[in-house]
Length: 414
Image (cartoon, rainbow, N blue to C red; front, side, top):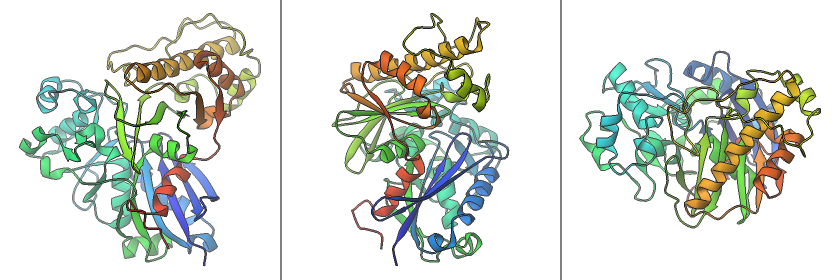
């Protein structure tokens, strides 16, 4: 019987699943939008359940392992049975008023020191619900739901909470916090955590011996799906914009993340800007029609900073940075042209920031996500980036599924 693996990708607007065979070929993929939104854990469960039950039975019965990715920084407080204390705090939510505590907890700076990081959200959640609650990121919480065991956390998802991937430990200062024992036990990507809970397997109609493996973040999963070469960079054009590439050594800087995945460092950053801001002004149909009216070889002569709300994570870490979305021209096509150029400018600044910090400039950029299918935007980006831009059609769910094909020591799922 041919063995299959399952990847679950929890994004900003919804969930996608992907089923791969042992040759990494995509056998099935489907997505669904959240009913309410990213902050509701019950929405995560309902979306995952519906998608998993929708996998054709012949494939579902052959799935032997699953891995989950989620939005980096979306943090939930829950009890030991996984019951949420309230809504999750999304990755874009800045928690102000904790600057002094953050400076004491992360005196050397880094992603955990930012008021837009998970550590600030952890301080806010413990203030709201007390120090006895568990603190779990989105992907870790869904993995716990599959296992009926919420002990575990995956390294890259907890980077902004204070996990140090270079030393494989939490910030020393966190050991003095009364809620330190409410942090997850960390495992690296692609490690088998255990067998799916019997009741969950029955509920989802999955094999009883299904192995649950640690996944990664949604943008990291996209990179794994793209299979970049040594000279490639990867840009994920989803609701938000993420720029990542593999490097020989970690890259240090504000808003920069360093994840150690399968023996290599994956460095980059994620902006709050992205295709999500476009949907504030245009429907998908309008985006397609208006894009065809754009000449990507010419400039709009408009200057926009298309953030969805105040605050930015990368290429600058500034919780007060304001969007620039006006003045809006009479022509909708011209307005869209300017917004696309603004997003291309943020992407270019992101790659420039990484280069200034020591990463090699990409000689080619691979794009994923809904925005990657827009040819006019692709050409605008090529002109601004000064290198070829190509599209990868593999979904991030396929990338995280690759982590389920073998464990961290290379043992193949069979």
